[in-house]
Amino acid sequence: MSLDDISIKIATDLNSIGSIDALLNEIATRLARFVATGESAMIDLKSLPFSPAEYEALRTTLGRGEVTARLETIGDSELYETHYPGVWWVTHYNVEGDVVAELIEIAAVPAILHSQPEDVQDGLERLQQQLSKK
Amino acid sequence: MKEHETLEQRLQEQGISRRSFLKFCAAMATMMALPPSSASAIAATLAKVKRPSVIWLSFQECTGCTESLTRSHSPTLESMIFDMVSLDYHHTLQAASGFAAEQAREDAMKEFHGQYLLLVDGSIPIKDGGVYSTIAGRTNLDMLLEAAQGAAAIVAVGSCAAFGGLPNAQPNPTGAVAVSDLIKNKPIINISGCPPIPAVITGVLAHYLTFGALPALDDQGRPKAFYGETIHDRCYRRPFYDQGKFAKTFDDEGARNGWCLYELGCKGPTTHNACATTKWNGGTSFPIESGHGCIGCSEPKFWDAGSFYAPLPAPTADVSSAAKAAAVIGAVAAVAVGAIDRGKKTQAQQSREKLTVDDLKGE
Image 1 (tube, rainbow over the protein chains, first blue to last red):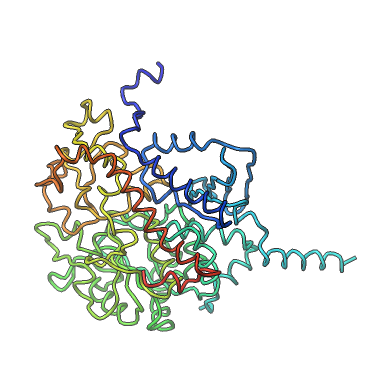
Image 2: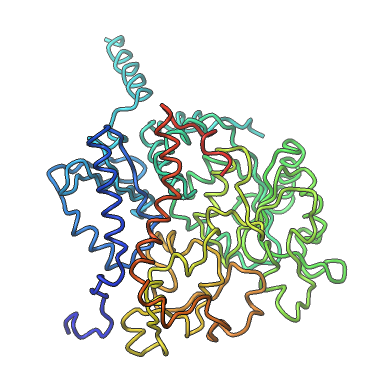
């Protein structure tokens, strides 16, 4: 039995819906602003109503670029640059592997990848403590 | 009883990094329907708040609301129960039982009088002196009236506590009523749904902690961030409604093509909830995505509102003629409007160096 034998099919005719075009226009506008002023932006994908087919269409259209980063903290997070530099697809998972936040971030580097000052300070103290033991 | 520490202290003790906390706040922002860029402002505030004492009373209910919450995918149960709040009494979840359990409730009520959050699930039967539901020999009515006195605010979790729900359905043999029918002098927030979306329960608690106040409510006492729009308005099948494409039975061509379920009794147009975007089971899907119409479980009297399979009495717009031509434009506009609403905060942000929680207030 192949997938074709299953009578329910994912709708593929998306021209009649247009949600994806609206979102791509939004991304293009924010990206143009980032180029002009350096202002970063985030779009919350979980707040937008997509059919499974539209979601796949968005993923396919944006594609994957050169960089993928992974956070390992309270569950994984995957951050990858799309085919369009400066447009990042950010997915946060919890420890059970469920998606807790999914964003399009327009920036040179997603904000959460930066080392946080509090963590750096804490790390410095730990390193100094380590050295003082010797 | 242990003194209530701040969330930051709690996380530090557990060796949780600032970056992890930021990620947690990003999930919170998504949950509270705030702009994602507000995560760092939320983090700054949440870190400093003291974890409030929470007393959870379960009355005439099926425990479905607690089941929903304990399967909450964002954040995890652990972070929500043990980090954000101090759950001092919940007779299903707590280890203590009998006298010790009731003692914990009384201690929390005394120590945090005027400050604790009271969560209630289930309706309250008041017929015949409230004898139809009792805990430790006391009626639900008696226990609610006592616990409400010292509460800072009351959260009615689920359609039973919010509106009376199933126990209140005709002929209502136990005289079941909602929390708001009995308590008039405390702020009450209704988180309706049978059960409510778990992320909405935790989102409301996060909002209370972040802003120190309850969120903006609609005319039914529900938080607008989650109940501000109908299922229909945010449904991915909405374009088919606008085009006049309807499934007529559950196994016809239209059903297979994923067309609108309006004629099969979908209550989406009159139901306010966040199912269409927040979704269920870890963000997997929601009833319409599985091919069944909405039954309207977050609205008052939904059990008595006629058959789940009878179409709503009148369409909310002319679906057959003019709508067809405007459908494509309409769908684009719908998405764009959502983006603009959320964009408001981004605009506010542009004119400032940093977004603070004060900027987010007044929603």
